[in-house]
Image (cartoon, rainbow, N blue to C red; front, side):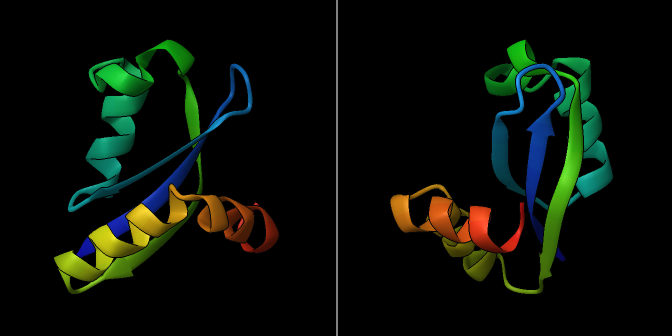
Length: 79
């Protein structure tokens, strides 16, 4: 399974969107600081995730969430 997820920074309230095959480990990576891009805004809490069987679909959905209309979709439906 592949997971598209949204994390919320407890430091500044910003959102981080990503995709992974191991959700528990990925959250640990973000909160430990080993995920470079998100290390300055830790700690994070998981606010939403969705499981996909197909990696390509998961990557496409993550990409959508990171674009303009995906930001609005996220705010309306997930946050």
